[in-house]
Image 1: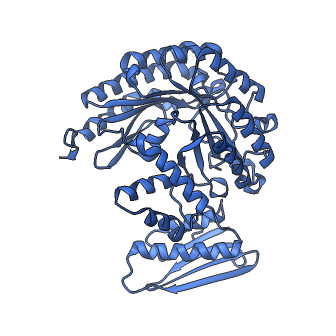
Image 2: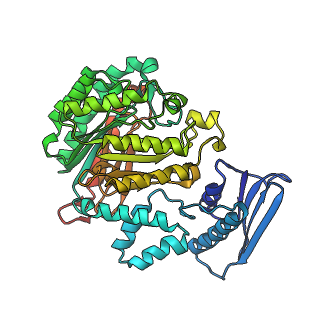
Image 3: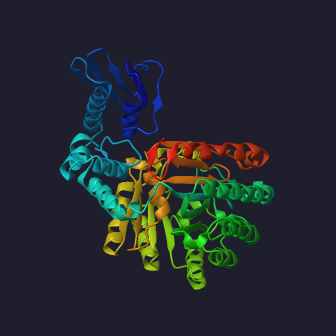
Length: 485
């Protein structure tokens, strides 16, 4: 399938509406060849045309634009016509309608702050953007569950993210900037040394700008891919430089049982972490093998039991719906298996096909199971007392579905809420780190670290220099009055 767009200042929105139905699809520079499957969007001065050619059949719709129609409204009208045309042509209506943004919950928060009524919010989602009642209710419940937690933010609030971009092996669905310990193990020691130095710099930056640390998150990659001693050095630096006892949440991803040893779980507990992730993705050995995991489902259960024995009282477990070789029945079995463990959080992701992952290279999109049916299993989470607390969407997700974090009462993952709803600053350390500076007026600026571990180590002076942007950002604000200078 090709996508051809002409006559618009930006074809971004109609392109991504087309991708709701045809993903992957190529953006064409020339008019599609005869009989080639294609979606076309053309705009003249006061008229627009949408068409689709599929399996030798064509369907076309056109409409007049009122004179002097604003650009934003014209874009919406074109996307609406295209969406309804593609629904009719394919016989499918995406559950999230023609909504292409990654933060539907943020839309609800923004509209509430703007004084929109509950009915106006519902009409926006269901009538204007054709979101199903089920998905709108999911987003609304998530927003309601976040309200009290978001109210605790101040203009001085920030979270700290620490990147460990190493894994014991690379999963086939992964597109993160990470290196296997086998190929890049020699980099880990100098990487941890540089990372600790950057953490000391961030501590000084935060103190200079009178920022208040709310949460810490050590992620990856797989943080437990480094040795117990290297993990100890890192977490000791965090303990020395930051007031760990005062943070509201301290998470360490201990995602894979093939590198998460009892000793590492002890270190994580000893240095003040209050939350960990043990991420099975699936409890099927067949699916684990298909995605390149080097452990069994029993290894996951054993790792979880060890974490509980050591005293970890807040555990998240990630699942992915739509993995190769999985089925709706198999995924339901995984959900029931995880529910039997009673972790405090269960995060259900929908498989996303990203260009950097091996799955995109090795498999066709139709090689995956019915993800919508898999997500129906999540109804068991509500019945077991879990409620949704954060939600986001990604481009390239199978069937245009979502990722949702579910929690037992009182155990919502705060960092996940803060980064997704963009409510306060995130200071990031390590390769691939993206510092997100959020001002009291909602203005956002970003500072990027080098992407790869070797580049991060060799050009560490540039990393240090870029962090000067944090001081520059906060100089613009009088945080006591919460107004920009």
